[in-house]
Image (cartoon, rainbow, N blue to C red):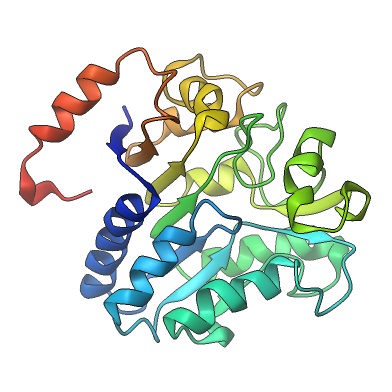
Length: 256
């Protein structure tokens, strides 16, 4: 089962995730990181920047990207990754890939899968979760075996992401995303969620049935998953007392 860690705030969550990433990079300087965008992982990037670690050899693969935004658009995930991850952490931008930027969009999914495999696979994948349960841009109904591909965003996801644009009408309808099958190949999944608005999605992902209707429930099929949530996001969990007990009694040498 996934390890559930309940923290007081995003800063504490960021420090925990940063611990796991830095332990990985200490073992392997050219580790492959799966990079999520949006507001959820910002605490992780801030924590890593504060550690001033040498991440110059680390490689990265972004989870997803909008389709149809012009080159250089500030809300393209290529721009967001550069602004929020690459530059603050001192990553080598040439070692960080974003889907849809490796060639023609018609073959972008296959190209991305080949690039991930050529890198040896993702060692640690940072994830957020949408209010409808999506991870990456895998909306409800996505196959658990799906690979990187172009998809259509739901209206709910477009409304949720409208805060980054002038209006919901400017949010692209299409995207390219790592599939649930792609995500599940990563060796360690670190899923973060904060706020009451994510409580139902977290409960479905962690304790609900494994179903395409809740894409986040795919994490139940993975052998190494860490779910880091605040009190509000944990409020829908039935077994919260056990999760607290297990975390408090976990051997220190195990790490995340």
